[in-house]
Image (cartoon, rainbow, N blue to C red):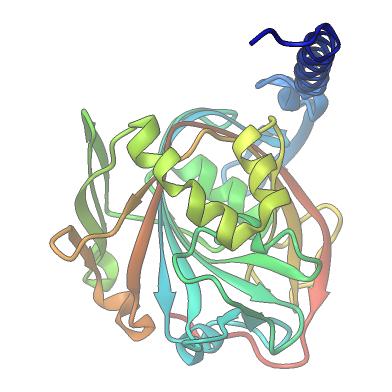
Length: 338
C-alpha cells in the first residue's frame, strides 16, 4: 500500500527539524564548554605573584599557594557527632546525617609532587561544619560531601595536619592558620592502582593512619557506576555540573582552629578562626570501602569512632589556596589539644 505524499513530506519535515534541533543543542553545548576555563587558567587568574615573609624560617615565599600536581586520596566516612563537636570552637557545629546523627569526617592523604613551596607529603583531618547548629544532610553514601559546603555557612574545618617538610608547615601555620606539625614517618607510595601510606608521630607515640588500598582509575567502574549516587545525593543540577566538571567548578570554603596563625593577611585575631577558600581542578574516581580493606586509624583518632565509607581519588589534582580573607570569632574556649 502506497504512503500518501503528504505523510512522506510530513515525516521528512519532522526528521529535518529533529536533526536541526540536535545540531543546535550540540552547538550550544560546544559553545558552553568552550567558554569554561582551561585546566591551568586558575594559575593565571590567581597568579602566585605576592610575597610573604616567614619569620620562623627567615624565608620569603610566593603567594597564593599553587598546587600544580598531586596524587590525592580522600577517605570519606562517618564519625561520632559529639566527638567531632569536642574538636570545634564554640562558633562551629558538625553537619550531621538526619537519619543516623553521625558527622562527616575525611582523612586526606596527599603526595604533592609540585607546588610553590616544593614537593611534600601530607595527612589532613577534616570535618564538615556549619556556622549554625542543627544543619543536617540526608545522603547515605557520602558522595554529597562534594557539594555540601557550597551551602552558605557550611565549611570544611581543617583540624590537624602532618607534613614531612618544614617550609609548607611554616607557610600553612603563618599564612593560612592551619594547625600543621612535622610527622616522623610520612609515607605515600603508589604501585599501579595500589596506594600504600603510613603516617607516624613518634613524639606522641602514635601511628596516625596507615593503609594499603586499591583505588583504580577505571572510568566506568569507578566513575560512571557512581553517577546514580552523585545525582541522587547532589541533585540533578549540581551533579550535572560535577559530571561536566568545568575547571574551577569545585570550590571549598575552609576554616580551622583559632590561635594558630599570628601574622595573617588580613589580620586574624588569635581568638578567631581564619576563613579562606580553595579552588580545585580535579577528575575524581570513587571506590567503595570494603570490610577487608587494609586501613588502620591510629589511637589519636579512636575517639571519633570513624567508619570509612567511600574513597575519592585523583592522581592529578591541582589547586589554588586563596589565603585568609576574613575570620570568625567564637564565644567559647578553644578545643583541647588532641
